[in-house]
Image (cartoon, rainbow, N blue to C red; front, side, top):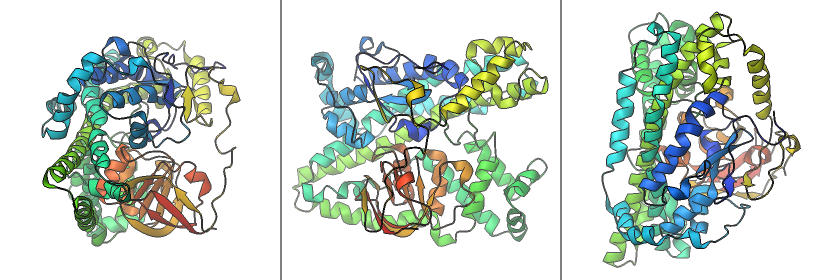
Length: 571
């Protein structure tokens, strides 16, 4: 490991120097695998992301020619380029501060250094028409096309076990041009999801600003929420079956052991679920992580928790309970507005909801395509491990793309290299990386960074009111359960308040088990918070240090509309 950089780190942009882990940690909590970076992210995702910005008329291609103009890897971790997102917002008629509040909730970020290059006359001339489209369109053809391509790739997957090793490598690589394409809809949906809230927020007086999160409510068509409804249905099947209840009572391992031979009833329903949603999973942006398809126990564990809930706690019931509050907040916000202003306000809210849905649809397309490459590589890894080429199947993801051909042909020359690299990669997981990096200044070497948990942090005490970002409306009191990863949810009890470093879509079914959610990172525009609103779960995002300041067993009151966590009792 280099003193200053990890194997796959990118060169920080000189034009756009400020990078942040905020939002990035939501989707990639751990350092990326070398294969995930070298095959997928660096040569395909980053340029695809940049292309989305260009197609959205935010930048010219020349402006985003640097490798990390939109995002990059530092210390092996994904960082979003906050500088270019700020300029994107400026070019859409917002300020850097508004963009920070919507996307990052970023106190402590390096300030934006204004530049004449922040504006572009040619693009500015196109901005009003583009904004009009964002605020009024009911259709986004790019998202529809990307979704159709992703679905077709998934449906037409060949029999991987019948492919040769080299064909498996070719299959994985063949997915990458489509991965680059799918970032079009992900980025256009994401960047335009901020405009509606920004316009609506400017139309509210200060004393009504807190209503915005409640009004945004649920979009009604957020793809990332769909697996939760399917998992809920599976949990009802288990709950209503004495046979399946008895099996689940034996533990997740006992259920998983039945998967190879079981058929009918729950098993048919679960098979259909994996067929439709198996591409999802924790930290799903990395090729080297598990999906529900590759590790079904991840989904079984969620069903096991959800089966303990009664029917009144269904996602539909929770959302219905929130609908009245959304309508009430809308009525309060529009009281006193003239007809034209109210129409514009409602139009901005509608745009925010639509683009929130398209943002999640775009993410789903990207993840579906990535999982097609993942499944081919998992098959290859299992073969190479069985042949003694690598130590274990998952070690395939520690290789670089250019090393795959030799490995596929049975080469054993990389054994020690992969072992040493895997050790170094695992060490990165223990490093506490900075939330912000200013690429215009020397980047501290890895050896200077603290280890996770070594900084302690100020312990919250009874009476403290911790301020985060308003993310999803609702007020709830409950007992805290700190969960640092989806592999540690077994102890979580229904009704507890989930406190986590971050949540990606694979966590959202757990939101139904929780009475509220608090996360270290994220803001109103973070995709996990969008899904929280979709499911009617009170949520506070961007509460820096929540997993350190709060402890399992504390009692707190969460107000998702105000973004506050009041500490009632501590253990």
